[in-house]
Amino acid sequence: MPMEAPDIETSSEDYARRFSGPVGGLFLSVQEKLCLELLRPWRGCRVLDVGGGHAQLAIPLAASNYDVTVLGSSPFCGERLSRLAASRSVKVTFVTGDLLNLPFPDDSYDVVVSLRLLPHVNRWRGLVRELTRVARQGVLIDYPSLISVNMAVPLLFKLKRKVERNTRPFLRFTKKEVSDAFRQNGYVISATRPEFFLPMALHRALNSLPFSECSERLFRTLGLTRLLGSPVLVRAEPKSERN
Image 1: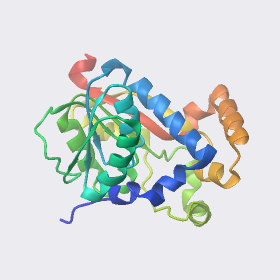
Image 2: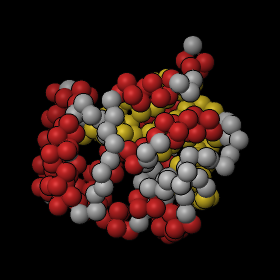
Image 3: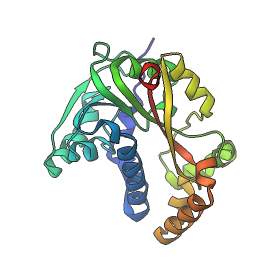
Image 4: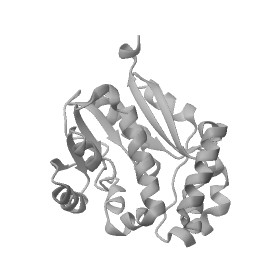
């Protein structure tokens, strides 16, 4: 079976441009804040970031004194990451390997994280299995929620591609699907953090930081983000740790 390597695209400069400018900076700052919040129980632990060549989480974690290793499916996935780590004077270890057959023994890392990856992996349940196998204390992922404005994705995909130019078709999930995949591997979801109520493509199209900040603050205050927000950050822990 051919190796899946969607992280090659997400590790590129072209992909990084989707998060440039003030609105893109907002996306990254919200993601970083929520991820650090979810990882707080394991401050300073050993982290494996699977498919994290985009550096959206590896660099902030390293800057917050986590011991970070990034696994990419190709040496290319480490090029941008290495430049950013050097510019921030932080240490990040990069290794290559198969995303669905991680080259590590069971329980090799305290926490395994994987952002911007799950919706682009066809054998995503296999990815979840590998993340939980290698993690000792917890796993952090994100996914686009089907129960959100993403329900209109099939209708809006052409517009999304026009706005984002390099967007790809992606899988959407229900919380139950993700929860069941973790449960099958002895994990339970212990916390979730939806990021935005309005589609990120809409924020990019409007390109107005004041609108994005004000509208998302309003939706979060009203509780709509909690109910219908996407993407959703998920923290999962071994069942035994929750008993």
